[in-house]
Image (cartoon, rainbow, N blue to C red; front, side):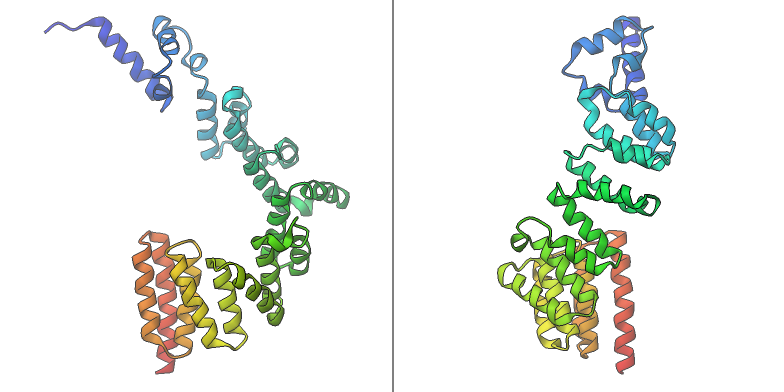
Length: 301
């Protein structure tokens, strides 16, 4: 059988394109001019013909923690691919130590970049002058979602009074479940349980989502109303069904069951959790909960 030399060369060039730029060929199946240019001029650089190469190389370099190389490539991504590339570019600048440039480069009209801005601002705020911090914070006030993110980060940093104050700055605060949850949680962590219960109860009357149910039940139980707290947490279990909140919910409710002597219910809850999600991380967290429940139930016996 004779080999068709032209066909062999054609296949070899196509394989070269796929190997050098994974996924590129799929993007150009509908663009025959690009493919024909590469084949008709084998001496022309594949990079010149495949505008996505800078993006792919930049992202790979970022994943390999070669941030300088990532920056070099991501800065040259064509405009039609810049949205996601710019997100990686900002992160690369930050990781390379040029976080001020990263902050200044952030496009605050893009939601994903606003999230990065808030992370960088929090990570580096201690390295800024007070004047610089105030200037950055003024920017936050223009974007309601950034106000909420900032309030949540303050909450995570255990700056509860500031978290409450910022959450209340969210436009239409009374209609914003997330902002009111932050205020309620600020009260909870500060030990102001009666005020937390008031916030969560008002939310409960309006919205029986898993977060509201979780925090309302948790507050009731900690306030001494154990039976009602467990009932509300049981409502949350019905809503959660394997969501990210569920592992915290199962952990707390399982412990509550064990605390009041309902060890068989606690074990059934663990089994339910394993049915919801069988990923390694989830199973590991459920097993940790199971160990704690066993410890509580053993102490009671």
